[in-house]
Length: 134
Image (cartoon, rainbow, N blue to C red; front, side):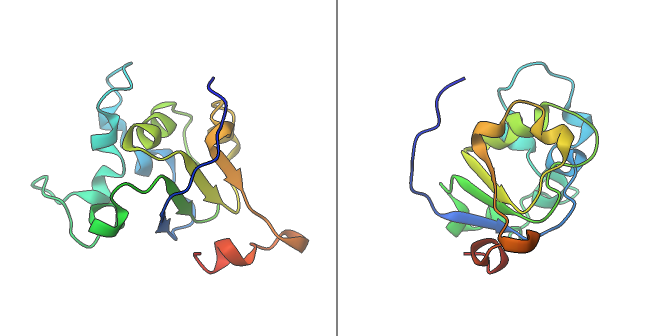
């Protein structure tokens, strides 16, 4: 594992709770053991229409999201079945950090903690940064 280094980046808000690994990368794209190309399938069903055209209203398709290295997610990010392809797709897309108030255990156990930082304030409530979407 590479050590984590400080960096500055814009933040992409994805304020959706309970994003499961099948939403992060649909199961039909799990036929590879390579990490290459998974960025194209990241949030595929949300990013593209039935003809494979980008949905202009989805945050990752908007110009302000280009080059952002931080994803600000809702509660319980990464829930669902245990698949390493989900964090691989996030890193292949260019995300170096995911901030959420909570992560599913199976997602954390994939040894990608180095780019995931949970942010909880006192009494277990989200801190102002997460709650207000920075």
